[in-house]
Length: 353
Image (cartoon, rainbow, N blue to C red; front, top):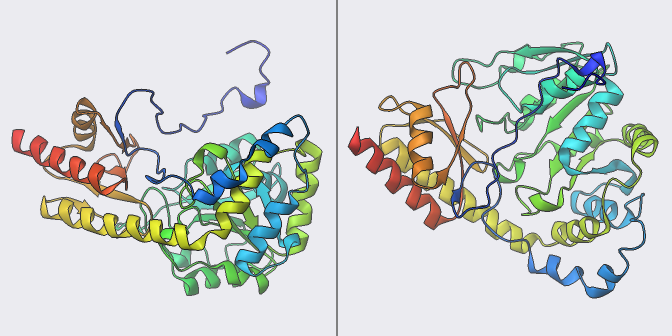
């Protein structure tokens, strides 16, 4: 740490991303899609587009916001796009909680929520999950604080129903409720329609998981236009060109190709269910994940040891050395072949115990 860092940030504990590697491994640790982007993405990244990279990207992101709006049946002024959904969440927490503001979220959830609260000086309440890792909706009814919930939650994979989400939103009319739907494509019960009914709801999504564009960093939020106006005010005061031209073009093409992505998502869900059953047959406890990952624990081997043994076999999964979940592993759903390799490796490791 240098002596120049502001005292405000000296105690900051940063978010730790999943490990990225350059060697050949089976990579099941960062919830990326095992499939390439839609062929339509390749079509729009043309030489003509590349030749214009000397020009700034469109700060208003018209092509992308219009494509997203059409997909979800809203108007473009209800869409905010960011450099990944992390960017959208950051602007929302900064703008609507502010220094000294209040925010609550599940105690076990996406690791960026407490980081953003810390960096923006927000008072954060982290609410414990129930013993089965589910969210108790009653903990958020009439909370009188801003709320952010990942739905489905990460790393547990469990999801709230549409009615449960509406009960939270409707009971907190004077506070912003952020529903982080990064994994909703694998679940199917989005609350997106509720943004037309409730002015205090912001729903965020990402192209990283379901649309195979993690490397281009594109996310978006949908809310009533007054919320979006506020977020754009912040964006244009900080970084007007927050998405590059290639990301804009690629994401606009991807969001329109429902046929391609619906097929890939269905395959991931099918693989998730198959591997979950296989792990349970091996004695694992697995949550009823509605995401593109499996959250699993075994009483035959510790999570830390299993993660290490799999790594020796060039298989990466995610281990969280945190209280309450330190004997669970988060396993990204990869290709059918890679997942079978994983299961076979787990069998081998358990047989050696």
